[in-house]
Length: 320
Image (spheres, rainbow, N blue to C red):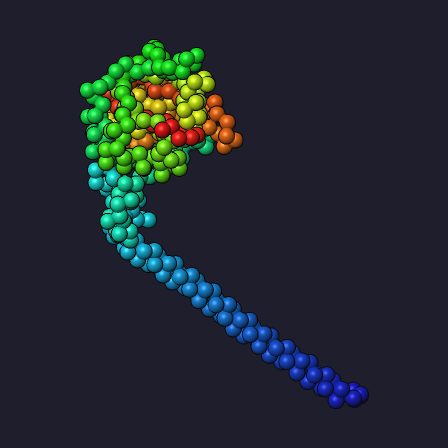
């Protein structure tokens, strides 16, 4: 007996074979397209990576050229501060014209480095503020005229001897203030403090020998007698004139939040080591225009050596 419609079976088989062949061809094309897309993505990522690397290299080369443009004496990004000659930073090559500028010489531009160590009370260290010659000059003027230091009597406003302050000192006179080197120091103080020379008292030079000190005190006046000449003291600059001192730090008990060394003792507050040529500028008046009780400070006991310093107090108005 013959099977009905054999041609239908053949047709179905051919159709199935054709569909399978078409599906296989479609899958192969899709795989090839995906492979091409992945190659493009990896190629783009490679280009971006190479671009970033080249950009970084160009930036480093640019920074290196900037360093070299200042000369080897300028502190580079990669080496930090270069060796210093006589503890001073040399002029960068880019500002050599200052070497012929008299005002820049007076201000010691390129040498003085300000460092704010406290905002309340306001205290700034001026590193390398005085030259070695200026330090020695002030000491030489003062040495023959040193006398026992005094403190201000709160009742009379006059100077009296006290065990609160055990140093010896002297004041420069109005004629010495006109000496070229003293005049240069006065002008420098005026610029860095932003207080006119005329508002300053005469410079006082002090010597602290072993075991001598100045107990914590305020520089602003609590009497009315001293306010008549120039008003209240608003700022003080303390300049260090000697090295090789053990102890003798300038101590601010109300500054900072940690501990510091004062005459060989660990105490709360902030202290500044007396380095020859450095200066400490601090303010007895706050930003509100009132005397700042946090400006209390003292001279720690000297344990070894001699501590020489020069002090200048600045007032609200002219003192001359």
